[in-house]
Length: 146
Image (tube, rainbow, N blue to C red; front, top):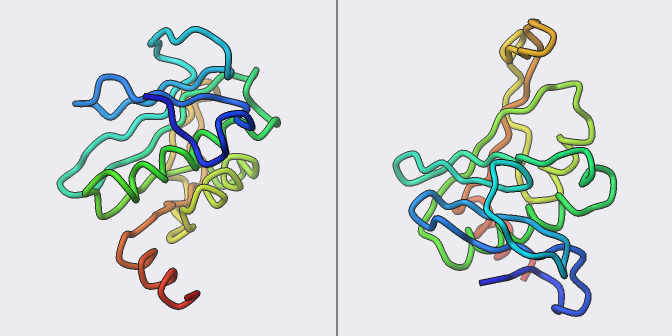
């Protein structure tokens, strides 16, 4: 199943759910063949009635809006086709582009955590933001707009 928010002819990427028990979503360029891999994916790790979202994308996807489009498509699936009540993640506070993607996909920065994330590449602990989407809050915001 491929899905997204735009009409199919306007998609830059295609998102396909695979390994439904793990809620893994593979992103590919629109016309590319789908091959499940550990990169170029969005995953939801279920925790009780919520899930933690992770974007596993390489540099070829960065800066083009593809990850935002894929994230919005996954969050659209969360809102319309799942019973998940909350989506969370943690992001390095100085990763402005990643924080922007999370915000555009509907997650809000809710808590700042000093020296929380360990970056293995540099062996440093960096500040992080907890970002969260909540079904009840999202439903209330939609009602207020109507």
